[in-house]
Image (cartoon, rainbow, N blue to C red):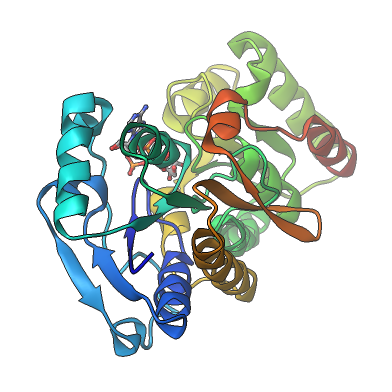
Length: 325
Ligand code: ADP
Ligand code: F6P
């Protein structure tokens, strides 16, 4: 393997730059040429392939976003499009690829491997922590820390005014950010898409919790809501609470959680996974994601990853309820 390329795909996540840096410098340190593909699979199709040198990744470990930029590329679902991508990679004599992204990006990576026999490694980069066979994903820790810092600020004003706040966090399909941000921010209630609680029941539960809090003298009530919850947005949920006589305020944290300087944890995680992904390619492993399992970093085949549902910590939800009384 002489030439390795790296791209970022799907939603950006803080720490992706640290992973790019690790891939580039590990590849170069091992005597390989390394190329950066700009704008994910869409950029690959436009041949946005550029050689990387050590200084290409200087001064980026602390930066959020991705210097390679990213994209969503619906055409990549078509086999004919992927054939074109494989031809472009062959034209540039790329014989190994590292894809930094989420499970969608790994489906594309898996197809490139199975259809073109291209060695491909995936690095889990998503704030959602919704990829099976890895305890961690790059960006999650930063997103949760950002969420907690913002909730702390909301708590100051909420408790000064005896207010109820609905705080919407990211997570269209995954409640992991809501769960961890909610526990870390001491939220009184946490709503996640995974529990699928019927609307009325969920609102009943929130109202009970607000009333219980008021009885025991709480001066604020924070409800963390994942964006993918079935209410059709936090504004609609606010309306349902207003119908029951409450006067909530809303705060939508949204994409603030996807940006910003990565935490020490995410920088370290990204650096290790970036380095291991290149070592895996150089050792002859043909495909799979480098993931954290306990104290180990393991390579797991894309096929296993894309077949399994991500885990959800139901027990954390119970802990959150117990602690919120
Ligand atoms: P993430 O990687 O963060 O989960 P997406 O699900 O949006 O983000 O996927 C990113 C990109 O990966 C898509 O825009 C598409 O180009 C590619 N992709 C997703 N699913 C598939 C698939 N089943 N087959 C081929 N490519 C896919
Ligand atoms: O996958 C990360 C994520 O931020 C999700 O939490 C969110 O639902 C989604 O991406 C939003 O993506 P976008 O705004 O880029 O379409």
